[in-house]
Amino acid sequence: MKYVLVTGGVVSGLGKGVTASSIGLLLQACGLRVTSIKIDPYLNTDAGTMSPFEHGEVFVLDDGGEVDLDLGNYERFLDLTLTRDNNITTGKIYQSVIDKERKGDYLGKTVQVVPHITDAIQEWIERVAMVPVDGKEGPADVCVIELGGTIGDIESMPFIEALGQFSYRVGPGNFCLVHVSLVPVLNVVGEQKTKPTQHSVRVLRGQGLTPNILACRSTKPLEENVKAKLAQFCHVPAENIVTLYDVPNIWHIPLLLRDQKAHEAILKELNLQSIAREPNLKEWTTRTEISSTLHDSVRIAMVGKYTGLSDAYLSVLKALLHASVACHRKLVVDWVAAGDLEDVTAKETPQVHKAAWDLLKGADGVLVPGGFGDRGVQGKILAAKYARENKVPFLGICLGMQIAVIEFARSVLGMIDANSTEFDPETTSPCVIFMPEGSKTHMGGTMRLGSRRTYFKITDCKSAKLYGDVAFIDERHRHRYEVNPDMISQFESAGLSFVGRDETGRRMEIIELPAHPYFVGVQFHPEFKSRPGKPSALFLGLITACRRSDTSLPNKGRLKKPVANGTSNGHFTVKSRENGHPFKSSNGSLNGVYSNGNGNGVHS
Ligand code: GLN
Image (cartoon, rainbow, N blue to C red):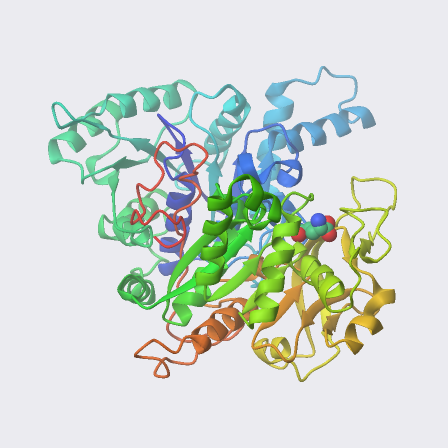
């Protein structure tokens, strides 16, 4: 196993994740098999309890791991299926060491950061790196490790120490350190300044790690003399210094790396030149070109809670993007804060209310994503009602499906009090109820998490067709509540179809309104398995339905039929990584540096 470690210096939000994913992609393009590990030095054991508002979405893996959204980027970019152990946090490491200590495994010794925590980190990395994640047998050739945070952070110290020991242990030829840094330009002088990078490399060295490659973020390509200076002061050969200068969109990053021969430098450090081939990024390049020439737009209203932070719905945005590109449409996302649609807003701030409704009504399709807590629920219900009554294409995900069921119960079945017991435990029409797989009383561990099977109970339906007429599908879940199985017959006789269910038939997975052009709700999260070259079937269904309802477009009808998840359309088989995280809107600092500045945080 060969290791590429990606660290970041100077400031956070530099795009280590993009850089690490792009390196992985470039190595894949050279014919190598790649896996990845993300280290988050925070104390939380996992991302499950972290607020999407602060930290972006919680990404869910097949095995039910609730992990940092960067893992989603690796999965999409490299088409991998990672495990919860591919995300290391300080909390996980300490927990494993403390568990061992309690069991008496340290035989009375004093348990310390060095060597016990640092050993645990190294053992974890070595163990997880060997697990195949690309569907093939045997371990990958290269493991790309991204260390979160910035060099010099107190909380990353044990990881740096462990990785220093690790690089020494695996030895030269097996370890390559890529340090992502910033080369700012001071406006007055216009000179590219190397000092911040010099300092961060010095700190890195002081902590026992020597960079092999410098990836410098800057607005323009680095001047030759600046490279020479960096080489001299940082002891990194000039040919191992690449510039990640600003580009129209981040799909260019792997191309930038290739053009600057970053793969050659990495392969040389890893002694892999003999088995690697010249990188083949043909499809990637084609895709980058095509996506930047799209002009016919598709407008999707995203009716959510965290509309101020697109990272909170990162995978949904990516899935929409994958489907739009496959349909040759430029994605425009209109963020509608669910609360703004509600009647209370009409009274308090009528112009906000009107603006929200104008956005919703101007959209080609409506998407209500997942969520927890009752804020904005009424607004989401109104959005579902609008889409249902006006035959506007609608996709409801998890909570989005639950509110569609509540809306149907209220409007069509006349159950005015219908609700989820999550929001109103006393409701007389509990159409969505607490149905945990585990404990009914204990909050921790009651979530239905990870990959579960859905069987098509009705095969002649839109979703079954979109999935390619298969008998069942496996999608990822993250919820506690579900449609009340005792009320299904009432719903079905009023025209709401429960086309997909779990193996017991008691858990409702997919709803459809057969008489509507596209009204689909799903208890699972299809967005987590969407890939650029293999868009999620249901997102593709949504975008296709939007396109069909659009009669104004001159080229309507001459578009190629897109192909859903699981089948290659031959054209978009490359992986993409767009802006959004790591240019987190939450840290603001460098947001949009790689982006095309259209500000919707989606298409870059
Ligand atoms: N809050 C709802 C539940 O727990 C929906 C969850 C979600 O949308 N991920 O069932």
